[in-house]
Amino acid sequence: MRARLPALALLLLACASGPALAQDTRDLGLPPPSGFQNPVLPPPSGSQNPVLPPPTGQRYMPGIGGRFGDRDGRRTVPPPPPGVDGGVIGTVSPETIALGGEPLDRLDQIGPALRRCWQPPTAEGPDTAGRASVRFSLRRDGTLFGQPRVTWEVRRAPPGLRERFSNSLLAAVRDCTPMRLSPALGGSIAGRPITIRFHGRAPSNQRAV
Image (cartoon, rainbow, N blue to C red; front, side):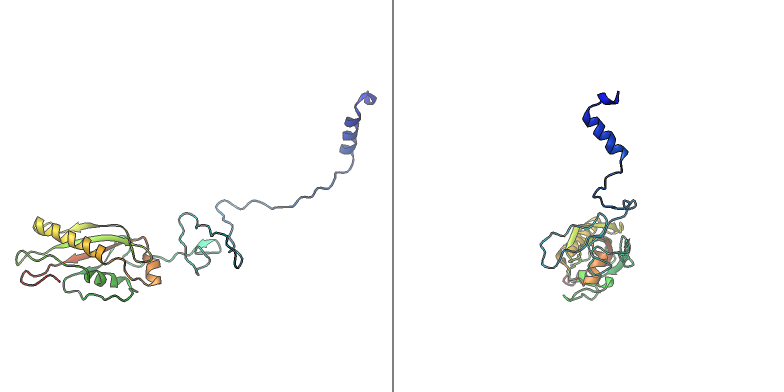
């Protein structure tokens, strides 16, 4: 019976019964655990390889634990300053001293910087005054991110004054941007909502400032 087998089948049987042939293989190890991201090494000096964008949800933060803010696989994004992400960070009135054109380094300087561009509407009576809050966001370079909007206003003021007061706040934010932000302040508030409350109005016997 075995004599009838083809010569190729006999050769295969002989290889199977003999020692296994060595193969040129490499041990690549186990795959990385779920959620693990292999670090991306920077390109060599003088290379023109493009730098890929950071993973979703991470921001480019050079000099802080790597190119994307990673240190030992953990994110090191600094927390936002107090008052950012929806909280009121300060109030602005016609008596607020306007800040010049120097770079802003603190969060409480944003309100005085807006006062430089705010022209409150004139009063219609001795007891009329507007009060409202405006919310907006800035990019890292100080430019306006999205559109500012009024989130709160006093209903006791006359409707005409309320409308002029709200429009003056939106105009102040647009006219004062882009703001000159320091790198530290720009990195901590970039893309986060900022809310500032304005109150007061220019007296009717004086020119709006």
